[in-house]
Length: 262
Image 1 (cartoon, rainbow, N blue to C red):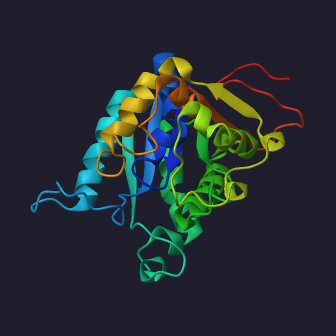
Image 2 (image 1 turned 60 degrees about the horizontal axis):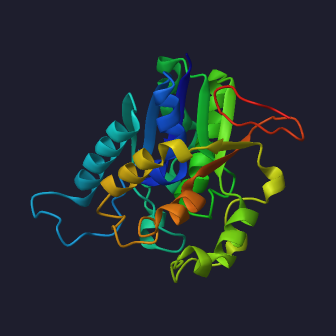
């Protein structure tokens, strides 16, 4: 069996981007480790947040519960602060992840990769999926950490831009209401031609959905992420896409831990 380490920017990113892959790997007997760069201090503050609890504490608890649902064996936080978006004061804070020294942050992650003797590391694509500074930093730090310790396989979690565009074209048919602030689809993920690995996670959608719902401070049951019929949920979330670094042109895998190639 292998050890899969997934590296994410904020609580809830793991459930959204790689939850099905993590649940599948755990169910197949692999060791699954989740590392999160920040505790999501700049997320939405829910109305039910207790006066005795900070948002970061709430989101930490949600992450632990989501990880339990997905079968994750270990959860670690790298200790950086949420960076917010470019142009905001938080993004300039010396303690935020975006401002972190890449070598220093990579050393923190590399220590975990070494402890776990990781076979596979998942980070994000070079634009962080959609351009968030912390997501871009996950790419930079993850790639460097894998270089430091020689992790055998590194995958970049991403989105199939062409598929997302086609989904939005079918939104009415599927009963989907895309978020108003969804922005330009051309900023999402990468073209289909760049994707090397597509993991079918339809058999694990119940766990993925439950893990997303565990992040209730950020993902409401009435949100676009969850408020859809089963057919639409499967169409939106049933496939998780990756780019394997160093893969030969034409690579077509179905697993991060050993699968079909073409």
